Structures are given as structure tokens and as C-alpha cells.
Image (tube, rainbow, N blue to C red; front, side, top):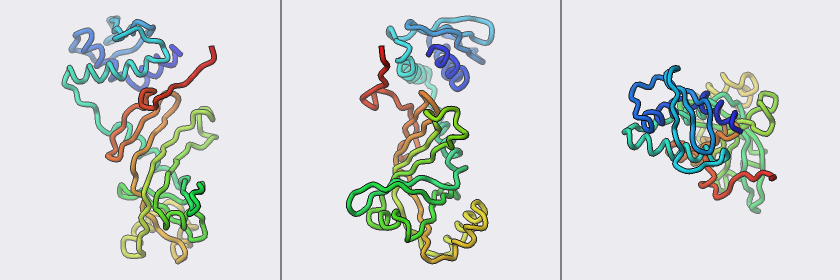
Length: 252
């Protein structure tokens, strides 16, 4: 676990290490920082590739709790130093991730309150999200009845580092059925460009409907120990055990 923490911090959060060094060690000229070691007391960090410093934790911390402790420490350090959190970093990454998808998994509920899992062609166009569905699909009646659904953008098993940690973005959403007007034509042009000849044929089938998806709250899982909540306003925060009210358990 120690190696995982060190590699993750050095690869994805060097900026956070730099902030912690500035706050806890009183150093202003911090150009880079690299974690060398971590234990229950704190972290040994190499600053500017020249000087080793020690950044203590606020309390005795097990390795399994280091993530939550670092989040709390970073909030304190940013506030004290007057540093605003960089907005949209992970959100932009989540948007980029889902934009590459040509389809999305849909979770809907039928009139008998039974869940249905299906999928539909997906397009992100001009910062909005769309699916194109047929009346034949079970999700059509479900969305017409209540318009609520959940979406899952799930990494292909063959591309994942491990099947147990597939990257994924999930959103609660509201469905809005669109008319076949000028806006419909522009969106379908983009759909056709992305999906190819099949969509060229399907766009003229009148039993198919273009649906805009209004994203609500969601989550983004980049990998093991890298989970984030997404608010309706697009703000992202690390998903910690205190927010869940539970944590992972390991066999002693």
C-alpha cells in the first residue's frame, strides 16, 4: 500500500505536495516536490530535487487512512495560503472521457417500478448530451413515463488495467424529448459524422427519437482509490469514506 500511495501522489498530485511543503515547512520557492516515504507520522518529501523535508500528519494515521488525512491537510493549507482550488480539473477530464463514447448504458424504471438496463447511441455536442432511441426499446416507454434515468460510461474490459478497476463515469439524468426541427438536423449531422452510415439510415426513421440528457449529480472513478463525486454544478470532490459512511474492510 505504501508504494501505491507514493506512486499516486508523485504521478497525479505533485501540486498538492508542493502546497503542503509551503504551508508546513514555510518554503516559498517550491518548484517541484516528490514523496520519498510515508508512515503513520507523516511524509518525507524531496523539494526542488535538493532538500529533504518532513511533513507531519495532524494525527497518527494508518496507511489506509492517509488519503482522507491528506485531503483534510490540503484544505487547511490552501485556506491558510489563500490558494483557490483549481476548478474543473477532474471534471474536464470526465467530460473528455465520456466524449469519446459512441454509446452509453441506461438504467431506467418501468411502470411496475422494475429496473431495466439497456444502452443507446450517445453524442456529446456543443456541451450537451444526447441519445437516439427507438419506440421499440423498453427504455422509450420508461423515459416517456417519468424521464428519470442513470447513465454509465464504462471502460472496455480489454482496455482496462484490471477488470476490478475499470474507469467509469456515472450520472443521474433527466430526459427531454426533442422535436424534429432545425436543431434536430444539426445534432443528427454530428451524430452521423460520429456513428457513420448506420446513423445516416436511422435518422430518417420516424420511430426513432432524439433525447437530450440533463446531467444531475454523478461520480467519476479513475482507478483504485481515485473516486470523485460530481455535483449538479459540475464541482468535483474526492469521494472519501466519511461521505459514504462506510469503508473497505480487509481480512486480518
